[in-house]
Each structure stands twice: as C-alpha cells, then as structure tokens.
Length: 545
Image: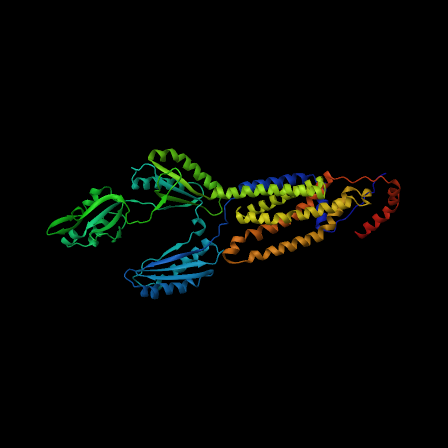
C-alpha cells in the first residue's frame, strides 16, 4: 500500500535549516569543507603556552646633572606627572627623584593599544619640553615591551675547552645572537651573565698621588681615544688599586699604555707610568650564572641567550626555526670548544599541550559514541559523533579568522564547551528516533518526519542554548589582567554553542535520511484503520500550518 505524503511547513529556524539542506547536493560537500578548514586552522593557528597580554606603558627619563633629589622632584618629576595625567587611558604613574636624574613610570589600563599609547606618551612629553629647566637634558621616552619580553627559548653556553678565554666565548655567543636575530618572527634576543672583553686599567694610587694627577684626568685621556665612557668601580681590597674598564674600542694593550695623561715637570706621563693594563673581561660586572648537567664533573660559568617571538606568531614554528639554526651551528661550536644546553622550550610545551588536547578530544568523542550506542543505537551514535568534530572545526576556523592563538585558555574554552556541544545533536536525533517509532510514522514520508522532528525541538533548544551563552557573556567584561587572560572563554564558548545548533539542525536530519529507516508494521487491520483516518489528520495538520 502506498504512503500518504504529508507536507510539513516548518515554523522554526531549526526546521527551515533541516528542510533547506535535506536534499541539497552541497550538504555533503559543506561537511567535508567544514572538517577541512577546521583541520587547517588547527595546524596553522599560532600555538603558545599562555595568551600574550598587551601591557602598555613606559618610562620618561630626564637627566639633570648636578641636581639634588629635592630639586629633581620639584622641577622635573611633579610637572611631568601633572602633564602625563592628561593622557586618557593612564592607570598608574610612579615618579622617582634621584641625584642627577628624574624618572616617571607610566602604566596604561590593560587592553589599551600599545603603539597608540606609546605615541601619546611621547607626544605629551615633547609638547611640554618648555616646562623643563634650562639645564635639564633631552628626555628619553622608553616604552615597555612586555608582550615580547617573555622568552620562548633559552640556551646556556659554556666552555668545553678550559683554555678558551671569556672574551672569545663572548665573541662566539654574540655571533650566534646576531644569527638568531635574523630568524623570521624572532622579536628580540638578550644575553644574561655574559662577560665582555675589555682593557682593564689597574691604577696605582701612590703613583697617581706622586704625579699630582686625578682619576678624572686619566678618564678624560682614555675617553679621547675610546668610543665609550669607562665604567668605574672604586671597590678594592687594599685601597691601593682603583679599577675601571674600557670597552674594546682600542686595538691592543700598547694602545692603552701609550695614552698620554698629562705633562709633569715638562715630560709626558703615559698610562703605563701610573697603571697596569691588561686585556681581559669586564671585571666590574659581578653578575654570573653557572650551569651543571649530568655529564659535567663540575658546574661551569655560562652565558644565557634568551629568545622572544613577535606577538601573535606561532611559538612552535619560531622555536623550530631557531633549533634548526642551532643544529647547523653545533659542529662549528664544538670545533671552537663551546658547549650549549637548551634550558627552556615554550614551543615544545605549547605543541604538547595542543596535541594532548586533540588526543583527549578524540578519546572523549569515542566515549560519547560508545555511550550513545547503548542509549540510541549505533547509527544514531555515528550521526551525533560526527557533529563534535564539525562544531570544533567551525569554532577553530572562526578563532583563527579573528586572530586568536591556541593556548591553555583557548583549549580550556574548547574543553568547557565540549560537554555542551552534543546536547543539540542528541536532542534532535532523539526526537527523530521517537517520531520514527510512533504508530502513524509508517504513513508519513521520511522527509516530513525528519523536518517535523527537528522543527519541534527548535524553539526550546534555541532558548536553552541562548541561556548558556548568556552565562558566559559577563566574563568578557571582567577588567584587568584576569579579564584579559580569560578572554578566550567568552569569545569561543558562545561560538561553539551557536555552531552546535547550526550543525545539529543541518547535518543530523541529513545523515538520518541517509542512515535511518522507518520500522515496518505488519498489522494490516490496524494499518487499514489508520489509513482511513489519516487524510483528515493531514488536512488538519495542513490547516494548522
């Protein structure tokens, strides 16, 4: 006996979506496209361990030689503070007055655009140069670089060859720093614990007094030949020697020894007459770090090279590029007697975190599928299981398009929404299942059952999903560091939930049409009775809609 085809007109967006895509030849193509862009987004999206938070601010440094802290406070720090308060978006201002220099530190509210904030600060200082006293020097405006200051890689370099000089080690590490700086998306590199090569002038105080000379005269004489002002350290053990170092702007010890300091009784006095000169390292720099590894017998002094990446770039890719460069440099370093150890790799940690989440997602999807087999049946389980990767694919794609990165908080947002994602698909499939097993299902065609079942649960499912989304929205308005840190949650969870509705309404009826069948009824008498009544029901149904 032929089925009576009942045309059902959907009232809700759920039924309309189901009807539109049920026979559309592009639905299968859309599914493949969604999964493909999701997978590509997962691979291309920049990965980092924590979200990078833009903190804007800077320091204004104004030198004023010969001024006391009280003078600096009154004529530099206070006027600058007053003017900087006029800038919109400034949260804190800290002024410091010291001998010869005044410093004003400025911090903007978190989330302010860093480039615009830096420009506003520079602009305000330059506009008010006339407020500074005549003998104040040109102000230096130094912005913060917090978002690129966190290193993703650190290498510790040490001497494998004990005969290697500190100056030579410094030169080699400096060469590596120069090479690393040229790697794409490396923002800045810093060297910690390094001792530079320099000429040390060990002044004999007795001879200095004998010739009636001052330290200032030696410094002036050396300064005329050196490019950089010497660093002075007057801390000595027996008060006989005063040490100060000159950076290597001079070629040899002889060059330094033969600098003329002054004339005494008609004959020239050279540095070698009053001081001992040695070619060494910056002994006035007391900072030092040491390294010890399993294959070393003792700890050794080390220089640490810190490497940071540009904001919004992929920590994994940048780290891999730098590691590839270091691998190429390894034979050269071994030949030079330099060893190195990788002491931090954020790229690997970020990658491991993302891969671990993907593994857990797959396990979760498998668990959901197994549970649904028992409650709904294996075909229904497959349909619902498909929706999870499709929803995550849409969410990942939108996150990528809006310039987000994959980090611990983004991953947490995905995990948080995972439990909520399958709700809509389960509700739709469950209602389709119920409609298929109703006593009059045998007289309705499959399309009507699928569209009607989807449309029926549209309104309550939409309301429930909106209610969950509204609980997430307030998180977007949390201020300060915590608000900025947690931003991925209110950004990604609502997107995932809306995607779950769309996917459930489009693909669940479509896959049900392909995979599910109506149960056959064998009671002909019952069948016939129902058949007689049905046209009226159809008319009523048609009239209602």
